[in-house]
Image (cartoon, rainbow, N blue to C red; front, side):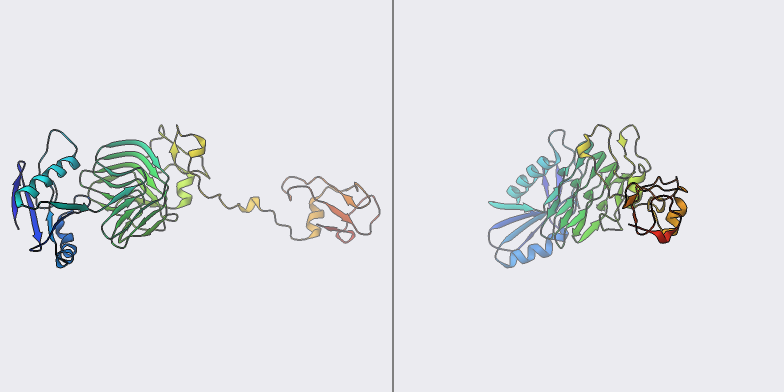
Length: 325
């Protein structure tokens, strides 16, 4: 495989095609270029030359640290130097996409953030996550609630599409619905970094597996803070809210589904006689057509209207003398 010494590091590269205009493709995350070779061959068959390379700190290329500038800026400068060295100019450059509800690509530090919007990525080589498309930095105490949709060969996750080498997640969670994608994870589509105290809702996401994290049911999520969540940072309104930050305005708190009523909350009346047995001994008609009564504790709840059918005003002691509505 050809190599080129560029800006102090050795880069692994390949040229696909013999003649025609130059095109360059870069894979997403920190992946090597090998997965792009079949695609490059199809492009080359249409009359193009395609330049592929492993960026520094990726694939088979050298590891190199620059004192100034972001990694993406360094990669861009390396590519320019490589193109000049191999004579691949002029060139049209492209790459895979990364989309996230909070950030597409994170190489920095994020503390206490949340994302609610839906995220989608098309094509066969993209990354999408409810919070971040790819993460090579640090994300601490964050969550995502938006739906994530991916193309056939894309990598999608409820929180992050790809947590790359060097990336870390701590006290994070995701609950958005996941649709499509070639590689899918409830919290993370792929993981080469570290993940601690991070979760996804297996019911709302519709996904039971993940490259990292722990799956919880909706009931578990809204009942109590997940293990490892800092109680000085996170709050919870048990049934119906999901974990949220104590500083969040009420209108931004993620709300879960209302819990079903318990048997104690659902009164059951077996017969009219049971109603009478639970009423006070003497019931007085409020009018010629209706009567009202207090209901003892533990009996049915709410006011009961009893329509007189034949009994005179006074005491009612038989289910046969009135009907309950």
